[in-house]
Length: 268
Image (cartoon, rainbow, N blue to C red; front, side, top):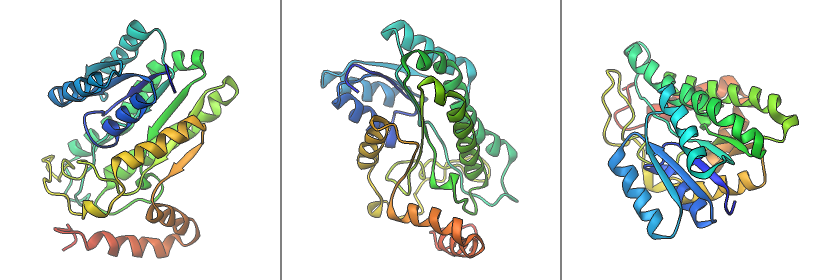
């Protein structure tokens, strides 16, 4: 990936931030985006101190104009796009019967349509470079969980979009990768939306027992280099996907009881 131009959305924290450092370490030129401008500038400054060439673009991928600007700015600065990593995402935690539909739409807009918009405007250039389109999905894109209806729906939609796109461009030399991390240390659970759209605050899970964002980024980097089709991470995540295929009804019950044990579970 040396001298390749990599766009990473949602690069202010978590997996996106770790990916920026991983690709930067490998000699890539970076275009990083995020909604939190101050945090984004801080990441960019630290990358530059390490001699990494980076363009920081504050923006919201759920807005088509911002997604278009990301691709145009990348071309203006570097003249090409080799890899697009659709990482920007938000989560939610509430029973659907209590969830405001505005929250559902916001999750879909960021997680799904953000991926669609960014891919739409980057794809013509990735076709030229025969590069990669990457979607950071989730185990929730293969095994839905209760109290995450909007999040699960957005990831299932992303999975379908990437699968269809993969077949469209497979004869044109473009690589499409779907990444499904398991539980990973990040702030996604802290800022997950509640039924009325407020951030829930404390994570309901023990983050210390999760795969680190940095380790996740290393796996993703290798998968892009090897041009893999899918990447499912963590033993627990792989087991959930496998058991869902074999015993879907049983996994409904197991998943329910597993999620119901979370701190401050909406099922209690």
